[in-house]
Length: 192
Image (tube, rainbow, N blue to C red; front, top):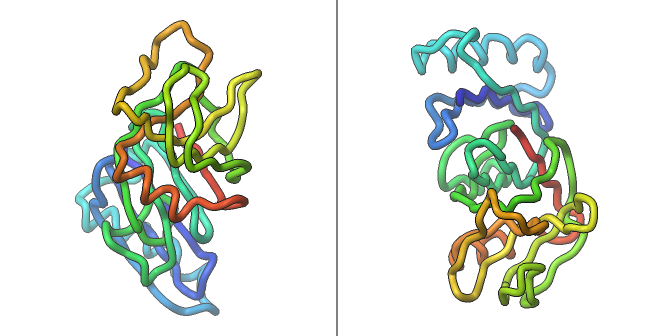
């Protein structure tokens, strides 16, 4: 995976190249009046810095503002915050990564697209009967709700199992971080 990410929602023009695990190159230029003139040079700059060609890019994300970015293919989440929240580098889609971690999907998966957090629970029982905490739901597929959670027993779902469950499991530490950021109405962007 080679992800080209861009964000122009603030006075900054942010461009990043990400391989699904780490940021390969990033560029931030601040000039609220020249976004159109700065975006393409920013793309060329990050590609050159990473030694990659535009034809190698497999996904493009254009993002705005704080959000959760969930990659179905990489089974990874990026929690994107404001520029001064950076801990892990530049996010796919622009902005800065406050945190990134691996997740474990269930058989029911959301379609790529833009969603928002619709429901949260500190603790409940998942549709698979497992007690879960830090539940952050952002959509449903048929009768299965889809969201991030932590299994109290640390179990992870079988992504190819027969159950119609939509829990996207994460570690207890990652669940605490997700819970602190992804409140009701918080944007969730699902990418392939």
